[in-house]
Figure 1 (cartoon, protein in one colour):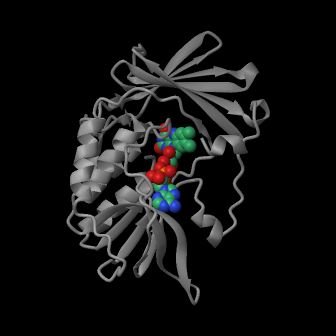
Figure 2 (cartoon, protein in one colour; figure 1 turned 180 degrees about the vertical axis):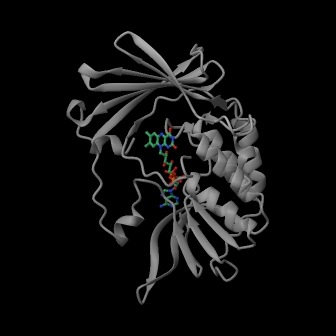
Length: 286
Ligand SMILES: Cc1cc2nc3c(=O)[nH]c(=O)nc-3n(C[C@H](O)[C@H](O)[C@H](O)COP(=O)(O)OP(=O)(O)OC[C@H]3O[C@@H](n4cnc5c(N)ncnc54)[C@H](O)[C@@H]3O)c2cc1C
């Protein structure tokens, strides 16, 4: 994503995402074949790096370190294709980062749409803002897509390397000795407890991380929230491809309409905290 997972979002998602399941089967079967190579050993002897979480950040890191010859053990809570409204827009800089990492094919065959700029609407007027892409190859543009499909492609790509083990499990604690993290304790799908050890553990478990709370006390402020609606059979007819923004300033409300596949769009409505119908903490666990 924008700088591949460096963004910690302060927005919250309310996902009503029922569509886009067409390609799930082939992705799932591909993940299963990579799961065959998963090692469930407790020893961790042959692991250089443990990565907790295979979202955008964990998968990209696993692929990059694996390509570099490191023995990587990724532990991900749920290896099924994620299905939530989050992270649908990759800016052109993010695409260039994918190219740099050799991951650009992860936006192929997932119905990703090229994005060349923004169409802005306010008070009955509209304008278009193009990305300044003049000096780049024609394939360089933003991309919008179903987040889960993209993440699944990244996971597959990482798991395709022989020295990357991708395992489904929930990390329950970091194992610390003399102030140094030595590894993790995790539970498998069937509830078995395992431990894994490595010289380096990288926690990429997302913005609602439980593990981070044990290491530091981040003061996260949640100033706003958004409601996401999935629009099936919807053609977004902006002249520029493809992102629209509308502002209703009086309501302190703005929204995005983003086409994430042919005839499929998401409508994201941002709400300032003072207009939220519930205490924000309730939205965190959706
Ligand atoms: C509503 C919303 C909309 C957004 N829209 C955009 C956008 O359009 N463009 C953009 O660039 N960014 C967007 N972002 C930000 C982007 O989604 C995040 O920056 C990105 O997903 C972070 O990636 P990550 O890999 O760090 O975390 P995540 O994508 O959250 O992945 C974390 C992974 O860790 C796993 N995990 C969690 N706990 C454990 C555990 N204990 N053990 C094992 N595994 C675990 C989870 O299952 C998950 O797969 C948005 C964020 C939100 C909330």
